[in-house]
Length: 629
Image 1: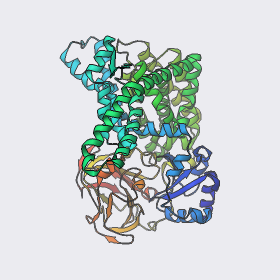
Image 2: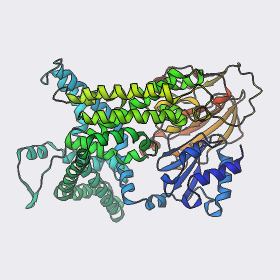
Image 3: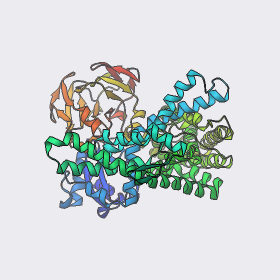
Image 4: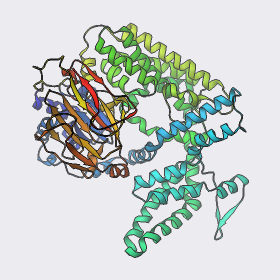
């Protein structure tokens, strides 16, 4: 690999020097802050020799290199020039250069993202309850129904409380203050007064009541306002008074303004946004279905789908249904079909070993392995999935399907298509359009989307190809073992919320949700790299296994604060040696994911990599987890 040429091409395809605001690197990735992410030619970057994949995550344009990232970074910096020579420059300015709309979307998505999984679970519970009542298995007066409905509906009813807490963390306020403000908006006496049509006044000022249950935007704006007010009082009050009077004044001032001004205005905005969305959709539902169904996964790949999330959730909370997200679900089934078509057609065991699990994962709603491991690198399956998605989307819209909850996708979306009043056309549309997208994508991919010949693009992305690490003289049948470095729950890589890991582009492995703050050596070997931000370690075993331990997701942004690394580069280590202690509480408080991906970065050098421990179960440090030949 020619690092000089690779660096030159990367700079060219990210849009040139003039499109780069900032560059830093972690243990595997070049992390660019670009003026315009859309300018980057991602497909060309992914096809470069020495690049595993490229993704947009956490506001950064990330080019995944692997263990050679330091060398490539140095060459890129040499070519960029002196004004790019520091990794410690403040990237906040780059955020300020984003337009107001992008900043707004970034904020809203950052607030909503932590509860999307819980929201999906709650929606599924409500969907199943609708099914059970439609089949007369349960009545709404049954105790079972009442308890399950409380579990499913509580998130939506008390959404302002949860969003208030999340928004407080996002805006740098005391999240308990902003949660209290959310709770005030849905306080029983307030809800009762609204439902009864009562008139209220505050010191003689009329209060325009609104129904804030399930609302989104009023509490977000109130939390932003509370953060400003809280910080002002923090600066002005003496230390002896801050503990009580800062929250007191913040709650009083923000709460009163929320009921008098913010709440009514933002409630009207929410209603207006829902009406505008529906007006655009109603111009031609079938055309909207075909376009969204055909091109949605392209929108996802470029990260533009985040702009839709607040709108889709607002439709659910305001209208109690959403026809747009109903269309988008079929694109997931189309990706299942594309991966399944490759699996059925391929003769290569390697391709089938990727396509089969990718199809199953996509059916469960996790499409990254199918997109980044199969359809996108092979290109034609992606086109076939787009055609199938367009057909499914058109059928969904033509039948007038609606989703009554937000969250689950793939087959897990089925309960969300059940009308709380009983099964109607929406559920039948889900079955029809999903089957169409799945079958059409499978057939088209089988017939036209895949040929049983060497396909470099597919092999290159699905299995990382790196320079020889000096292991070529090893006997490939020699068995090596990787032992678990962190106590916690073992999960498959496909569940990691980072495409570079979940897609398998960086290599095979597993991930740990930690239960302990200590990280130990997983084998005898050498420390190859310690990231400058201390969030990742690269090791080389004595028998040739290159391993990455990446502590948390996007924790490079914490600049090393939670990490106490006990080793340095080139240190020899023995299995079980303490490598690091981590303040996971700080990572959680900073709103980052603590999941630890553990990757065999030279997977291509090995004939077989097998998981020896059960997924979604607790594993202890020192337990054997990977067997490698």
